[in-house]
Image 1 (tube, rainbow, N blue to C red):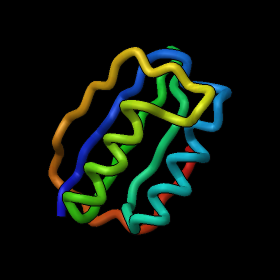
Image 2 (cartoon, helix red, strand yellow):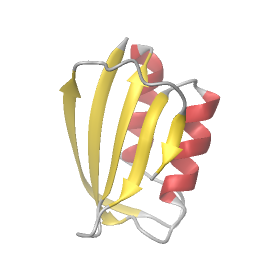
Image 3 (cartoon, one colour):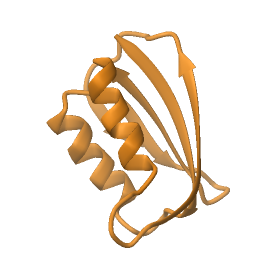
Image 4 (cartoon, rainbow, N blue to C red):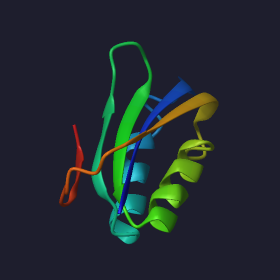
Length: 88
């Protein structure tokens, strides 16, 4: 079990980033959440199998088709045992 926090910068709001992340997290059985922040970034937390979490982080480096990702910051954190995935 691993946990990663991701902050994505660029044109990442209003381009289905959160919904795309939600669907991918559900497909790979990754727990956590994703949200838009007031500064125009998207923040997400992913918990689960290390390979599945890495797939979500890789997705964040590209985003959905209409997104333009300029930078991604990732931080490893201690897992909290989250269940399910939410859009906040």
